[in-house]
Length: 547
Picture 1 (cartoon, rainbow, N blue to C red):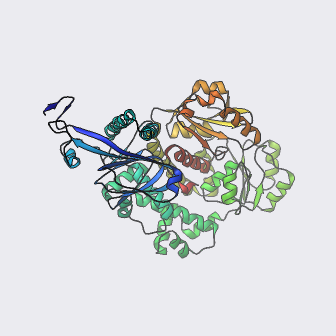
Picture 2: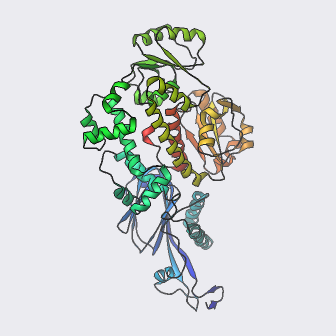
């Protein structure tokens, strides 16, 4: 290699030609077309999921995923889901000649014989902030800022080497996640591995391997679980005939549908309908969540606009008797009369009910008191055994465990070496969530690093603002109760110097969560919580089969 002063002949030189930063508002206006301003472009997703078209190909990629495009072609971008944000960077690559000048038409020659970043890759670390800074420097348009942009481009290309979405199943999870999300929305259509592989830009063989690596089952098994889960709801909640239900879930042959259903649930669709038309009442939020996991709609259950907003919205019209909140663990005479009028075959209640309340319930019907100290899966199995729905409980737990594995693998990319903390604001007090609220899910199942010791024997533990400042987590999950005092406490905290100087605030890593499902401890609530955590921390969809 011949030396030419500061650089050697044959070395590559990279030059930024244009940077465009697209916000959610721009993406919502419709498809965005980026005209080719250089021979190479990199599209980086900083939020949401983005559909990309270039060179007659299309991909859907998520947070921190990138696609590198050659050949001076226009690029079409569209918002697929989430809070979209994109940076598109156009650049040239030159080879230096012996006299130190760039050779003409050097993009093709630069690829030959030089290490090149892969066409798909994912970024690690806080690249969101770096990309925003890069876009800001480009807008300032000073010589120094443009040089810094070129330097940051080289850092970006170096970060991409060896991170191919095609060769690494973990990085490839963004593609298979889009396939899973597609199946969740289109399970009633004719879907094959070939079709799904084409959607996420993978070979069929590699798609099969990547999907099973992430979800612990094949794509077709995943599709079958979605179809059977939806079918069970139709069987349980409607009078539709089996051949009609079969078509609604994408299976044209009723007999094939019945065989698949029996394989999934251990009983025929007809027997399933008979078993699940049960008159079961729940006196607690958690009891409702356990019943729903078993595909049983309670005849009576506590529904409150604030504390059980999701259940009220999704199932309120199917639940005959709406009981009051379980906050005080007591039922008044009027509610007891209404509960008795439903003639329930079984009542679910907490073992925390006082003896006087227990005697009232025992006079109405058989009562199963779920042990509050037991793990939610143990409670689910106990209830399933009572209702003779053991196979349904096993199916739920199996799907949940598969999902935990997939989400844990996905979040490892974004949360590696970062600490996380969940905090609630209720009234004038701040609380750390304990094991049975968020701790077990976040730190045991998803293996996220806790920023402090998690309360093991209580659902909550008080913490002061100063205590929060001392812990200073990298990622903060925040739940604010829906009452004026809590809202006022949050307003004061958010305007304080202490809050603004927290690491999570400065790096935009504060994630607001809904009040429910953290108020209950059940199979259904845990699965919903898993979806919410995935959505907040990775910008992917929650698993809609779990709500």
